[in-house]
Image (cartoon, rainbow, N blue to C red; front, side, top):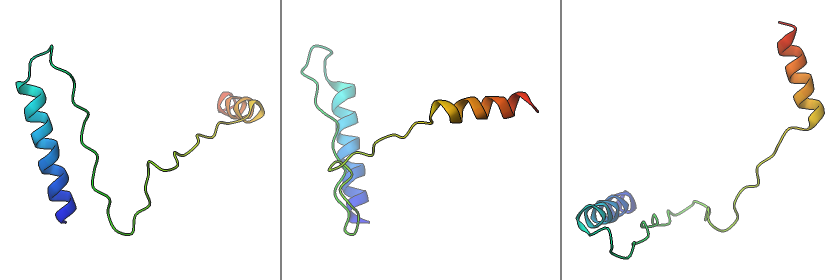
Length: 67
């Protein structure tokens, strides 16, 4: 719960800075959330998207057309 409070405070400070800084100022990156115990690091290995094969797409549209 403390990590959630910290993340909310960092985000509110970042939003305040973004809203009150000039447009010419160097952009500040958004804060990253604190790591929670027991959770894997999501940035370590991004998930690869899976796509349907051509045959699966054709089969899907054929079945939808038959409705």
